[in-house]
Image (cartoon, rainbow, N blue to C red; front, top):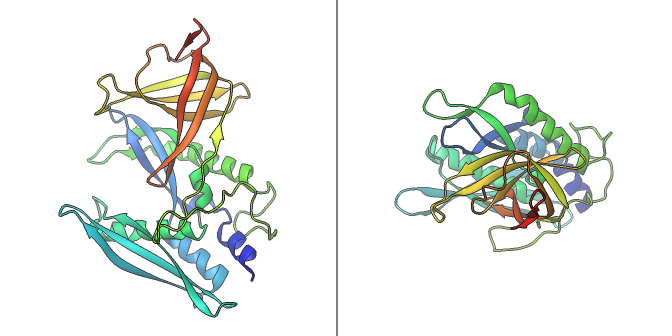
Length: 282
């Protein structure tokens, strides 16, 4: 298997059942929020077993750093490269979680290390999804009824990035790198790959929903928006600061929406717009 075949096999899409969705944030009332997908560790292990064999990969964990309150873990996933006769290792790290402490940190660090190999990296091109939240109990959870919508969003991403008729349970047959896969960029010795994020430029949107978000920097807060373009496609976007003119039903034209990445999560940022109703420029 050459390098391109290895990349295509590792970066192939997953089934819905191989994902777990986590709440990224919730509103103050804990009734709604946004969700982001991750590949489960078991699915990552199965992918590595099927692509390079059970003896063709290994992982290792290294305690990273601690600020006295929370520690972090590094995970390195190594793959045997036969043509070079050596192991190639890629590292990434994560803080210990609030719920499962070190176990959560080990699990999350392996998921991030897998992304360095292309496993599940396509999920970071997806926009966050608005969901209803069940606030019963100590920890808010995504309502079970919302998973139909979440799975539908996952399938849309697969249809957009991969061949529509390609099997979702096996690697694509082509040996070409998917055209939507961004070039790799080195940012440190440990964080091997951070995907480049494209800029979106769509001229007009209708505002479907507005959620005000508290901000420590701005007294008036910020905004999370659900928008729909002229083709009926919806997306979520973040707006720095609060503009009362951006309300449900308003039309935004001459929009400039850019994508930013923080903590491996891609955000849409509404940077420029004009309110069509009164032609008031932002």
